[in-house]
Image (cartoon, rainbow, N blue to C red):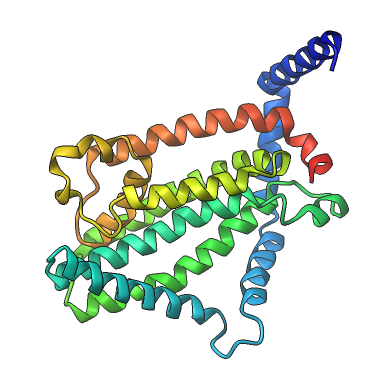
Length: 284
């Protein structure tokens, strides 16, 4: 590429980025997002179809989600409970609630990066807000969460765990996670359809983050490394769901970190989504 072409490409990029900050472009982006929400019947059907298709012709159908998660939680819970010398009656509810929360959060991220790639045929054929494909991914993961949560309920009943009225705080915690799941899907879905290596990179990062997030280990096991938890946004998102399930209030640090990520994430997403949303059909 010549120096002239390089300068021209840079100028084009700067113009597109400035367009992303243009109020009219931002309004169009919001119109797409709100328009996608209004098409609930469409993405609701698509998300349900994805779940049914995944377990088509199986005996248990979607309940394989519950079975597989239950086997994983019980196996790892019993194993690491022995390794870490934990009280099983306290450790197993901690692990099960952590896995259920992590499954929802990681599902939003991993499926979000592929939301536009998986729908490339429909994007070219159907005139509709492209955000519906992110809503579709979120809805499918929420259905999976609805199956997984029964694992925690069974464990809680077995060990006599009664979280009390605090458990109702799971609802606003879920709402915050869903709001963040939407911007994650829009932003990383945009990057994923443009750069096809992004889904694999994100998958690798999420796998690593799992081990540095207290899912199978307790925060109290690393009291001198508290900074690792405070700088890990995944920990805070898991905690706003897990803490109420276990009968605890999320900390102020948890809420502050989640709100900060929400505001920054949406600001960045609107910037890129308003600039490049119209290119998704060409990249798909």
